[in-house]
Image (cartoon, rainbow over all chains, first blue to last red; front, side):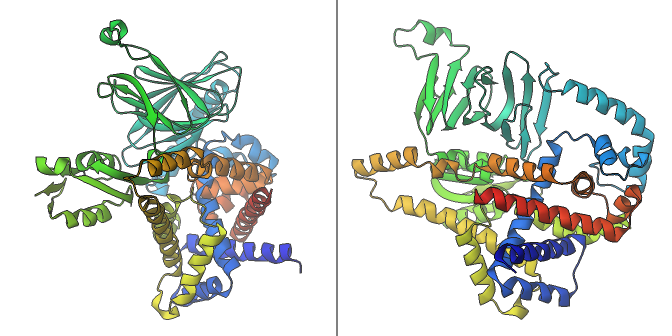
Length: 348
Length: 172
């Protein structure tokens, strides 16, 4: 057997083990057998990790494909009409029995809705705005009609308004990172309150803290940021701030009350994009702002109760969903930590 | 049947969710895998009750250690020296790999997407039913009019083909 054939066999074994884990609990003996298989060769371990990583991406990929299930069933030559009834896909994890009854009764309505949805989402036509909301503690990655990819952070919402003339995304609240597909005929615009960022084939992050405070960080390429509503003060003052800045990779624009108009400065991209890796990363940042950052992800908010602690500067890298290790880290600062049903209180 | 299935797999689903947070990291990158493997070899066989959970935990811890080390390496520089700060800044701006690291998810999603689209319609259909709709083998078998064993076989084939396709993409 040549190398490629051996690799193919390993991939099949890895998939087989992966599905056995997914199907249900393995017996103690099977678990030991699995461990022996993992240890038998580094390629086994490597392929198992690769298979687990790959299957973890299926849902995102399938959800973004807008697959025509009806024709898929037809093409697969299994074509019983029942096979398409479950469209749109059930996502509800309650009793399957109840669920099936609901599905059956809604089937025709669902198909109608699906048909009109597909019609509206046909590429090239102006489509209805598509609103994508992400709940507290979650993150989503979606692909837009033009192939651009948006990573949406927790507690955020975007509205996608694509037309023949322009590709506009409104960041209604929160934070999103855009990987823009190159299209010279239609610039890609992101509007966040007063700030508007325009890009052609690039990667950038927009964080809307509230209506006036917005940051735009460029990871790759170039982005123009416009202050759509310059205040009277800055518009007429002799030393007025510019209402447009040109950003390149590694630069960040700030717009808002703290920045007093539109400013730009270099920024550590590793820190600015940490959220995409589901990390909270900070260096010499005041404790209250770090707690605020954690509170976007974790179910139980952290509250800093002593004013003296608010401006304590801390540094570190943490899993955004793991407040425990952050709390453990805080203990070295000689603080009192009290956790009740709703909040984690930090005081000195 | 399907309820039972969901219960027995919940532990695995939790693990999977935990693992998915790390999906953008190159967990199968050669050097990282090597370290994971070495740690697997170093553990006593009877100490590991759930090898899969152990594997994911080891991999995840390694990724965290790497992140901390990256930060430390930067902090070693004498920051009182203005030239050091300029050098750091230049490095941050010029190092293409650093901004790209962790944000190449788009590339991965596109890769997996083209792998998925290369599959036969029946492989695609079974993946959709199993991974997106969360149906059991029994339910998929009923809808397609084939046996449960057949469903499992198609699923194995579909995942294996995706992996082969991604390997080809990675090689180029």
